[in-house]
Length: 336
Image (tube, rainbow, N blue to C red):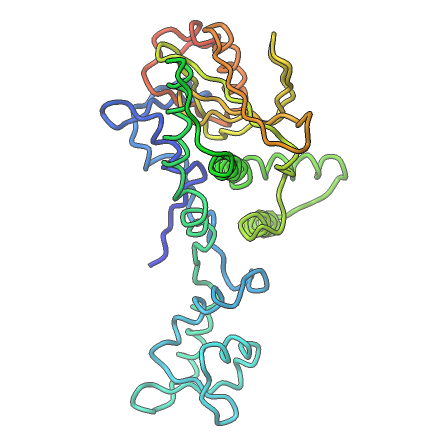
């Protein structure tokens, strides 16, 4: 049975912000309330990544087969020839000419045939969410563990890194995950479309927006289109010690040109990946090598970044522990 609730901020990502009780602190920036919640229950929409027969042309052949699952208990004939699953898919436009038999070789009635077509057309399959889970999210714990160990090695002044190929593999997975966080978030999509609508006085209906959103997901997951040429960027890590931490939000990745004091780089894309690690992509100065730069920062710098992270929130921000002093975190907010 297809899953109905799809998380646009992955649970595996939010897990890093769990406290010792296995919950996260959720701050509503609209009504100024605080919740202590299970990560599974937040940042999801019903059928967000599901696609129906409307997106048929976007899918590879193997995924198309899932649409004809309602036909499995039956035998399907066209011009007297029994069809395989692939042949059913290839000839679905000839539905009116199909003859469909039950297991006892009796033909189904026209009403049941209409009902089957309706079910095929409207069944929602979470291809996109499943692909994110299998292709991208599955390696997240490995990535986080690697860079958390890297952070601790820097604190201990005892750095031992793997060979260059392994490091690049981990770095590529990290960047891919961050870009997927940006791509899959419906808020980024709605903001982009609204900007285009305003600029060109366009009218875009909800089904069209949904289709555009799905096309972008599939292009990203299939490697057909990326937001950035990742080979043109270096990775900057902003590390904290255990006594200070970063927040995250319901829209974790933000794009903003930010230069840090006393550091020769300008970050373009930013994302907190754990409460103690903020990652940025910056333009390469040497196109031949991937460079990973660590930066340990003080509490005042962390406050500045938390303020920027908060500004990118759509409605919520997340903390790994209860915030007792908003100003100490860099926020001029009053919560109930």
